[in-house]
Image: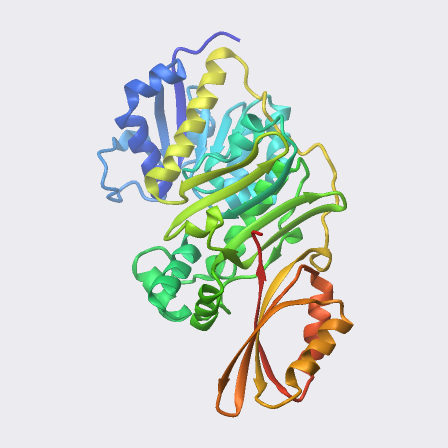
Length: 430
């Protein structure tokens, strides 16, 4: 394949990410050309409305509402998918690969749900599929897992991978805000959508974790295999109790590879204040990786936003361009060559924080301890707070199987001296 003198790019979408890619490719044009080995030139941009003011000086000749103006363009070598969602993004990406164009995307939904068929299309047509920005925005993590840490057996990936919930939990911790107040503030700041369910219910983090686990453990992990819990049940009381016990509460994505299979779960967790992830605040993301050779490494930075995300997308464009100039596209494809089993949530084990509302009378703790013991749940600490005729028990368990803990809680809920199981939060990071 002859070396190309110029690399043409077709950009799908001019929203937040597309606008950032356009800015970086133009503002850093000279340096990008030197690093990529050829000029990278945007040839066409797919938009819904050509007349819309996008706050940028864009030639109207670049804009089109017809996808075929990009897919059939003979000078477009790379398609940058910045539409989001599944369709038409998936349809356009598959068609681009079929026509011999490399694809760069930041679309976590598309990669998490349809990565297998996208990689198959890229391999069949010997073209690149890059998606660094699909997880943690501008933080480099996909390429480090695929390349820089490839010599390791990765045993663990733990991350704060949703900036919205991290901002909310930071405000709840620092200012004593309740969940609803923290959510309203996040929406006012533009960090949370009008419908925040993807963030606060944990689904956004689950999609990212499915991608990370698939790469880290060389096994295809589907979204429905990820156990998901959000932060909607976290209260100011839980935050305060955690602080008194020297913990902070974070929404974590946790993936581990063990002898009996891999576990993938997203949920709130108490982290010791000394853990590196405990000090990751506001909208920042961080991913903590453990490898058998490298030990522990952590990747930290802004997980979203126009320029951080566009930074990762543009770097992928440069990588794809470099491969095109050297005639070596399609070298790094799907790495899911193993078929490791995914453990059910009941077979995972950790420590637990449990908050119970109980009657303030003799024998209550003995009744509760009996049911825990019957289900092989050992208590590490018990704190009691009394308010009139009622009391609140704060329990921390030793490490225990999830299924044993859940069975114990069923029995405890039936005790007449227990008013409610107010919350159960896992404890991680020891």
